[in-house]
Image 1 (cartoon, helix red, strand yellow):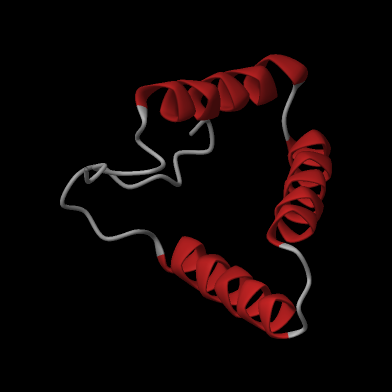
Image 2 (spheres, one colour; image 1 turned 180 degrees about the vertical axis):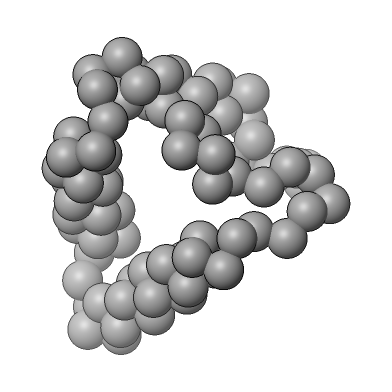
Length: 84
């Protein structure tokens, strides 16, 4: 990631990233418990993330982050190993 917050293999994430991830995980857990559809949760999180990135990064840096995300989807990295 452009901010340097993504840990490499075998490295612990920075404390700020761990905290942010924990808060997001709890928010997702809460919304799922309220029967909010997963696509609505993901869309809201993505929209909020994009707005936050726009406050601190230029357009090209954001495009780079999005291209990395697209590459992860295309490679199957997000779904992990498939069984069957």
